[in-house]
Length: 313
Ligand code: MN
Image (tube, rainbow, N blue to C red; front, side, top):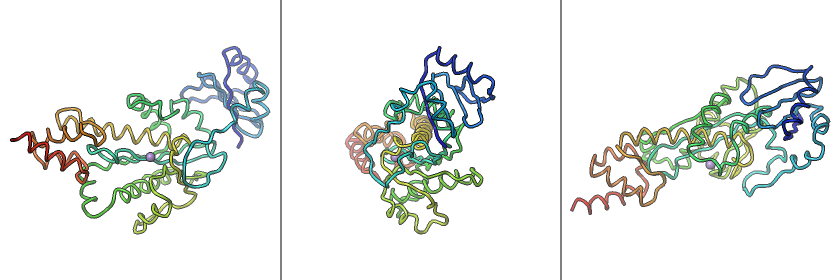
């Protein structure tokens, strides 16, 4: 299916609505101000001024309104990434994306999300605020995530610290833990899709393909069909960007809970502030309690113990 998006001003929008009003259809999606369906083109107009044309006549209809700006829209920039060879039109395809958060944070869980964005939902997902992930603050992501979760077929898994430590101490590397969670989230999404197939599955690459599947060699059901790996995949398809936001917000929400348990806001990452916070919990509540809030195998645990010993003297 062909897709064209144009950006129009208010008066152009009025002309478009007038032109297609006899073909108007009802679409109660967020941000949609007008929708129409002709014999070969679906037209969706958003309150941001974007108009999406889909179907065999998409290019012809879009050119009717904005011939000049179309070439600018279809230009693709190649972000720096590594991994599989990717289809040139990847950004416009129906994709399940997956991504994880929390793997570098001493406090808090590892979260993984996968979500499905069908080609006709791509523009909507952008409208919901999934743009350049670097521009998204934690607060903004907390606002966007509920809309994404309401709109998209998705799965989000939170591996809380006690379970993480148990699995890690059984000899599972963090890479293997991540692979198991990605595979699980992808399975859940495929199950919810009830037979509908994505064109591809795109995993934000944390391990090369061979290594990823080696991690899963004993897993009962491994998702392999049409799977692509790429680093920086959140820049390649909104499905990965959306998964990244959903995973991040699940991490933040668990951190909120753990902060209430600790009695103060827990710092993210694995730097000196984290060592200090961990030492404070050690002195106040002891090691067993600290362990339930952290990824215990991180070097921060030993650093915190040293700081606590010094403070105790
Ligand atoms: Mn990632």
